[in-house]
Length: 243
Image (tube, rainbow, N blue to C red):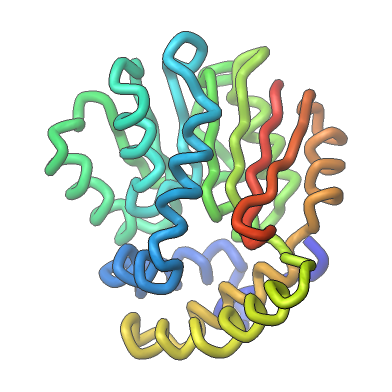
């Protein structure tokens, strides 16, 4: 990370502040995602999950699963998947996620657990693939989280990361900054009743590594065949790496 950015600046650890923030906005999180992204976030998730396949990826971990959108999309695209485990530090987000999983009748294939991305409660070489959608920038210690993911991936396993990035083309860059810095936080405050959550979104995106630096970090941590694909004029990035 370029600098340490936290939601509330209250002296607590970033990890605890992020957990507190998502607990506070959990009830409005899905609605705000659809409203503020005009549904584009759904398309991004679908593209990310298309990097997986039923032949190679039977046991999958979704880190920072939130309300389980990615876990559910994996099950939609790969119905024959053996098992999907979703992990998140926010119990309130997980509660909403479990309701969605149960409504689909997929409890036998999707399990959601509370846990820390920097201390994953799994044995080495457990998963065929690990996904993280809009979560790595919330890691308190980015490299530790990525090391843990590398540890629990089997040899040849795939990492798929979806994250906001920094558009550079005019006028997308300018429009992006205006929307994320001023308009989105206002909408977020009104609907979620949390004054800081959606300001933190803009600040955390600005503080996160650019594409080249993130790819370099993956390589330094032992990931191979790393690649990046820009989505929607560079507003978000899709990263892929192998163990």
